[in-house]
Length: 306
Ligand SMILES: [Fe+2]
Ligand SMILES: [Fe+2]
Image 1 (cartoon, rainbow, N blue to C red):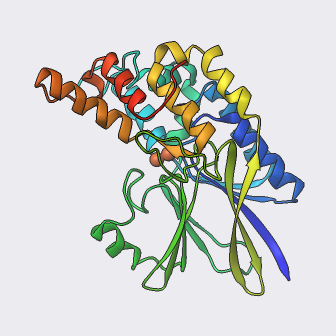
Image 2 (tube, rainbow, N blue to C red; image 1 turned 30 degrees about the horizontal axis):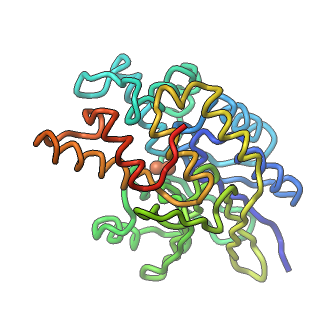
């Protein structure tokens, strides 16, 4: 018999319409416990609408929040007086335009709230075994869980379940008696990586994703749910907000992700870096690659520009 459930929401990335539908789904299923796993903002348009939904959830339900690496970007940019640690500033363009847009939209009190959040936590709900949760790994918001160092530390956790975000795709594995489960992503869910020369439409296309944890029969049972949402408006918002102008290829990749459920966010910028190096002989970071190479790379991956 099911005693209670918790909704686990990871990686909204500014997609407030996806978050709104997930919260409505959870509410319709009478869920009162929520775990939010970070990367609430950056990427999609109107991040303050995400913040309003989070603050509302906080006031209505029993919630736990942690911060992700995207919140850390905002915290550290502000702490450096509106600069990166190396003194550089974010500029409009496909690398940093969406980050800069988000930074301009957020309020100081939003960033204060991010600063107040831990990067990991543990929650014992009723008599159920405690659940540990984190964004990347328990001691780093931006970390891969598979690294030998991270796996070594996992073995020290007292909990037997660790929920995580950051990877944007559903997976689960056992490590020395600990069950590690990634909650996928509410706003930018990923089923597979975008392939060059083909367009794959996956089961996560045009959908939000959430993990439900049900406590039944004396154990936690995970359930991934795929939630319909107004994805057409999410795409329209990229244009309405100006993101298609401020971060042209990034906005096109966001639309491609919404339409396909695939992940172009690593491969396309990497190809732009390689194309630029071929032509100029210059080894450059993402932020220093001229826009035309981003556009060429997007075309190689069949990503339509706005
Ligand atoms: Fe993320
Ligand atoms: Fe992340």
